[in-house]
Image 1 (cartoon, rainbow, N blue to C red):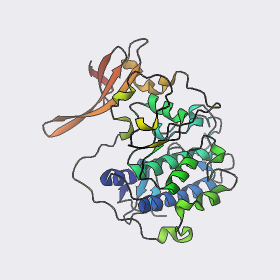
Image 2 (cartoon, rainbow, N blue to C red):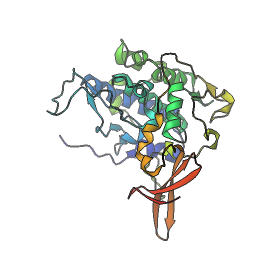
Image 3 (cartoon, rainbow, N blue to C red):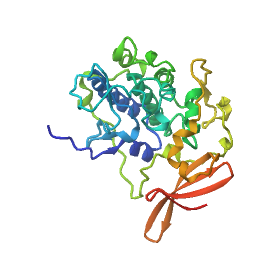
Length: 322
């Protein structure tokens, strides 16, 4: 079978170029992701890394899910499994920080609900231009996820808010698409009113934004913004509605008794631990482009609790000074 060209680039690029997508555009793309996830889940596979960067666009603007490097087959999988593939590591921590569901942070086995949570995060990002749990470091992102520190911009429709709220339910079994009614409940949600599910792939796709000449950073942008309001915070916070990223945003943060705080959550930043001294921890982390004549180099800046600023060359994974 010939592979279809994905000349349209990534959905992430479209979001960045347009700032945010219109609700009609987001509805179309979300519907195509739902259509693809239904097929994947029916085959007994959990993708585990759904995000805008892994949603490719064909030349005519239709969605293709990419990067199956983290896929987890279930025991009911209809596909032939590689001989060395096991089901014993279903709790392995994989994925991208801003799209990881709370149950994974608490070492629960992978379920189809993992992908549904990531779909909710992705739909939120389509409509707002930013992931719902964006923060200055993975540690802070995880704290916000566990606290379900979720706020909606004023321009979100009631249907969009309701769908995202349900997709980001703390209980994986209650997320539409992963519950008893399966994908029927998800497709019947009012947000998808007007979608012709049977002829979706034949429907005209939204117009693609033209590519710019500015070099785009391939790194995860949700982790690269310095946010001084979180400096020094080490516990789960419930941020008031007036303290959100969006003026007038409403909060649906909830204290969940069945979700525990992460122990030693900074272990997820272990990639950078060799640059830290004993008992030293990361407060903030950011990427920076360093322009040098006709070229530019990327460096990783790490602010620790000393306080100390460490500069790392990510290509050589070596320190460039403090």
